[in-house]
Image (cartoon, rainbow, N blue to C red; front, side, top):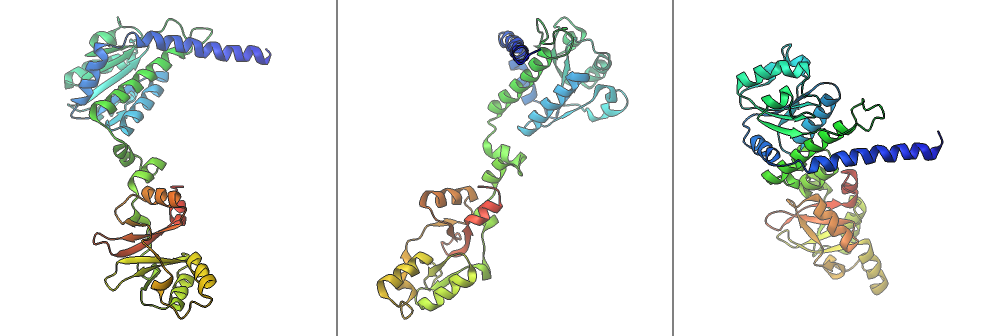
Length: 323
């Protein structure tokens, strides 16, 4: 085979699966909506089960549900009949996936599921199957043909099953009003989680690390603080601890250019007034936006009483993975 023939096979595979998806779209109706409502009313967990390739699809569906606010886990049906069925409790909802609807390991579970009074949603390739008839709600995942040239390897059918699981998850996201903040809580190590969970207080420098001088302090003291604290600037505060200005390396250069020797002057004489500040409870991502907007590398942090509490630097945001 040459490259063009291989490319054609790839395109035809995708076309076959797209056509299967389009047929599935036309079959989404009342059972789909009822399945969403059954899961919404679930007092326990969603338990997804399936054998073989259907089981692999089931694991992904369970993971997607769990990561978007629907407590869910995967139960291997063969392990289920050998003790793991104890994971299933009254109040749960089962999503069973089977292309034939006649998978022996799942059929064995059906009486036990019904005895517990657990809701059953099936994703099946045959709506006339045993599994479909025993289900409360049926999602039709039937396909005309697999993308496999032998029409044997699960390809189109698994794609459709996976997509139906995604459709359930997305509908549940909308139905329960799941927001970015909720997603972040379940993904605290991800980029989104960091953007939505990390606050300025989590990253700021305080105490002895904080560069600050009184407005009546001499410029020489301000230079000493800038050099020792290594943030390239110092806050200028009044007697009550409020920030009245900032002195940066740039302010020092401008003062030297203008006055020649500014060391006999006070900090308030050369400071830039009304510096950009941020509250300690603000998101670290907000600090980044301010720094980017005004092309600055640090922000002084105020507490709830508007008093100087800390400083946050661009390097802190870099280390936290926000940049």
